[in-house]
Length: 196
Image (cartoon, rainbow, N blue to C red; front, side, top):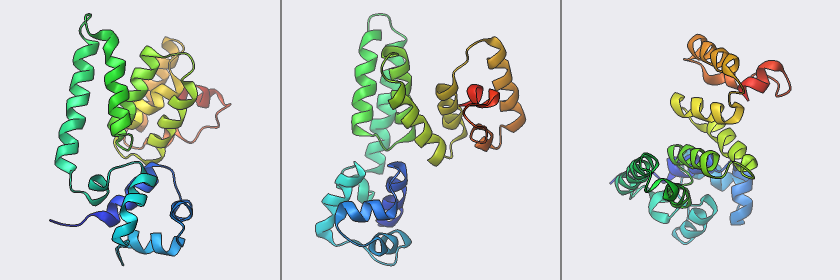
């Protein structure tokens, strides 16, 4: 089995919006050590693995890459269960609990982040805007999946009216291969109010 700890530390640190310095500070080590791990020039001491996993909000299995297939299966199950519950009137209200449990377990996965954002927007529209914005901005900064970036952008900006929707869709067609167009407008500009 190939050890993926270097890649995992780097990916998980970025998903948590932590700098190498911030992670090092949390672990009471030097940032050079974190940099060395992420480059694959060395590995963390085995006694540090639980602390690293805790700082990154994952299990040691996820940190080591041992449970990728099991995790993927569980993620797909959460996504499917959420969809099924939202499509059924009898189980509709319990869909939020599914999304919340998924996010509690897989807060590092961009698909689960957006599932949770969807649930917050549908089931807890008041009082969750700050959390929605934080999660969506994390996705836009770090995710390379265009569909998830489009979802994040939608939840950040919303469509106030049909004109906004058509403008957004026109930009989607025009810039669909480069999602940076979501990020370039100042928040207080006309475009920024639509895009962000």
